[in-house]
Length: 191
Ligand code: B4P
Image: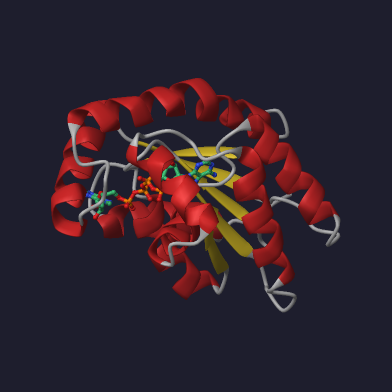
């Protein structure tokens, strides 16, 4: 079973690359961003709570996203593996994920980190905001998201480095070029 964490700052291309990875490697895509946006669209109590935080560029509470991931894992007993996109985003989430997977006698195989310079991230998010009407379409929210990432999410890379599961690639180039780099990694067996 191959369980992959796709990591990177807001706008690094995690969702974009996940779509290609699931097709080629037959993994189940678990995106906390997508799950939260579905809750918002359904106007559920969870969605209403999440919306104001996401609009402000702030992370949603750990318990909320951990609960969502737990129920999605339970819903896919047939899975050959998962791609975790946008999760874990805090150390508490990383620890909870290890515990959840241990309950299925499974674990994270690797974390792939997409490295993209800040200026490029801002441009991509501005363009995505215009194209898809996402709330992080202005400088203030984008800067808040980058700040949250640096403060709460970057330490998660250290968590996976400590167990030799961390792999870094450039997230700059065409979508196909970046996917080629990811594929090369995923085709290399883990020790
Ligand atoms: P997410 O939905 O996870 O998304 P993201 O970080 O904004 O973007 P991603 O990296 O997926 O980039 P994309 O492929 O779209 O997070 C949204 C919010 O949800 C968070 O701020 C937080 O509030 C909440 N949330 C989610 N998970 C959470 C958690 N675990 N804990 C707490 N809160 C959580 O690419 C960006 C744009 O760039 C797209 O327009 C794309 O077309 C373009 N692009 C992609 N690759 C490109 C390339 N190679 N070149 C040029 N453009 C490219």
